[in-house]
Amino acid sequence: MSNESTITTKALLDKADSLFDNHQYEESRPFYIQAMEQAARNNETSDLTEAYSMIARTFMILDKKEEGRAWLEKAGKIANPKYPLGWSRYLGVRGRLEWQDKQLEKATSTFKEMYDYCSKHKLHERAIDAAHMVAITGKPEEQVEWGKKGIKEAEAGNVTKWLGPLWNNLGATYEDMGKYKEALEAYLKAREYHWRYGDEKYKLAADWAVGHAYRLNGDKATAEKWLRPVLAWCERIGETEFEGLTYRELGEIELSRSNQDSALGYFSKAEEKLKQAGMPDWDSAGFAKLQNQIAELSRKNK
Image (cartoon, rainbow, N blue to C red; front, side):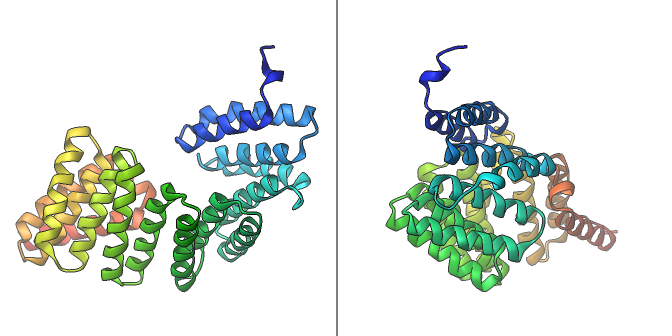
């Protein structure tokens, strides 16, 4: 035994959260487990609820949903609305499990409940998280409304680090709705915050999204001005996913100019890089579409 007893359960949770927020999911779990054990010894129900919930989430985020479900069930047995931190954390993870189970209406309802609860208890960051998740799980009209609600909450609570992901998701929602002008405006706002707070990949992805949006708006020249530096950046740091996505964008631009040979070259490079990045696993439909474009252009160029 070390000086474990002198470390508060809250401090253990904070340490675990810091690791989790930095995408060190496996590394965060031992601290959540240590927090769980200490909370159980000290009868700290709220902290124990948080620990159980986050142990579940460390599994869920790594595609080990069933292992996560077992831990969330433990949290559900003791979660109580009279403990704001424990209850809000439980709702956030429960909603995510419902989302992973493809129960979108149920997940949306859970996240709305979480938002109302967190707003009432002045848990600003968790209210923002809830709004952010409704903007993912809700119907298109809800996604815009809740995306804006999350942005408003972040601005009101001065939680500016959230504004990059929130603006980015709103941009993606507008894009899905075919509102490309609004999507571009949102992606430009997202870029502002990703460049302020994000790591290199977030900055790179933000620049890619802006170039992609200019292309969707028909401004091919401006799109290229954004995308070509992104391509060089990707090559320099070995970022295969966005290198492939950028080749695909450049291929679309060349195709719109009826430069079929050039488009085929870009699409072929995109296929190679995106296959390396595992796109057939995380977007099989998008990868199949790219392969169909290559096949079609190859036939025409024979």
